[in-house]
Length: 113
Image 1 (tube, rainbow, N blue to C red):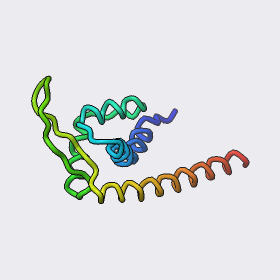
Image 2 (spheres, rainbow, N blue to C red):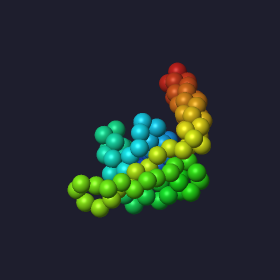
Image 3 (tube, rainbow, N blue to C red):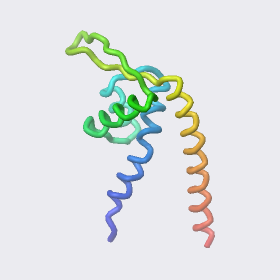
Image 4 (tube, rainbow, N blue to C red):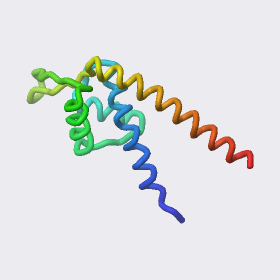
């Protein structure tokens, strides 16, 4: 039997950027909040995956951040979408919907054979 775990992991990685930007479109968030929101939707991600992705998104101008004092520990880094990030997210959402539609059509046509 074929192990599908690797394929599932690759599909999740492919949509993480879209999911993270979508979460941040709802408001500023710090990494632990992002991880929790992803876990709530069953997209499990670890800090070791998230931090490099956030850094890359920041370096490309899609995100910015600010430090905020915390009552329960060290200051927290809150990430926020930039205007460029908001526009990029809209483009990703259109592309995602086109991809979902194409995949669904392919799956449906395969069932009819």
